[in-house]
Image (cartoon, rainbow, N blue to C red; front, side, top):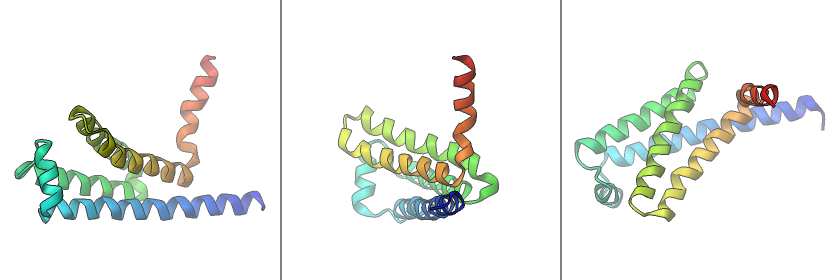
Length: 133
């Protein structure tokens, strides 16, 4: 397989993952907006209900929208990372270790998608660590 084909496959895989994960985030937000009983009850146990639920859903949609568009993808990645990192921290803070894996896995896939689509994202950090060594 040529380097060009590998790059094209990586680019396409990253793009597809970005769109699928953005759809996943918007779907999750839609569940929160619709106040579906089971997720609403689970989030209420964590202290998120009523207006807080709407705010969380709005932040989730905003992060997905920022992540899906190439011009705002860097900011969207930061926003999604903060949002999902907060979700992991909330679950861990309530001693729910197993549910904390769901947002952690989604976050890992989002970073994988961003890296596949934009491999240069991690190079600046790697270059700095090599220079300081």
